[in-house]
Length: 303
Image 1 (cartoon, rainbow, N blue to C red):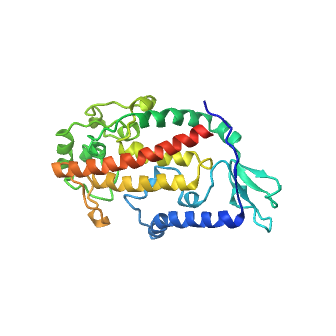
Image 2 (cartoon, one colour; image 1 turned 30 degrees about the vertical axis):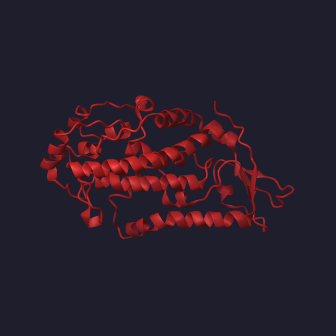
Image 3 (spheres, rainbow, N blue to C red; image 1 turned 90 degrees about the horizontal axis):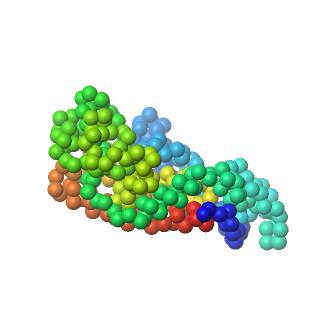
């Protein structure tokens, strides 16, 4: 069962947490600032923008540092409140010995109350996914199934061309077994491709079907991390974000789209060599993701 008995046992003075907040902002800015510069020029990035359109957290919100539940952030000596004072799910901590200016900490009880359904679902989905063996035989064909019969339906990424053209893309789909287990990828399939999938994932079967070899299930660890803010530390959110960033690159390299003009070499999953390259990356992502999945599970069960 979930509990609100998250013990507050760390107090950070302003001179301690300010450098942590600045380091986190700098870490995220290395990814987001180049994208923001592109957007100011009216240019959308076909690979990286996904992390800020599909997932709800803005670049500014991602840069905002949170210590996680169980830590008190001391107000500066001039008694001005830190950014936590303006953030949901924080409560004020009055001045006391060792905390002369007072401070702020995550209101775990309020967080658990308002996020009860989310916490309940994540506490089932993440351990179930963690416990399964990784399946590494999908070869990223979900993106191809989404682009199937593009001459009829168009494509999701119209700003970049199909590497093999519409006919070549259809041929790859028709000549492979497609076995995507991730509902939030499957639901974007072209209608004609849905019946080709060996599995028929649904929203209400996610706990039974998610598996740790799936690139999208592992990318979605970032989704769960963002939904757990501010109860989890920004360092864990950033770790999940960086994994999602790296997975997104490989996901699109293995897709039917030609991204050479953006500096991304294709992973030609229609060939034996490309399949091997994809599986190698998939296995490495799975190993990284399992570590982060366990960290998220630990936080959920602690709160």
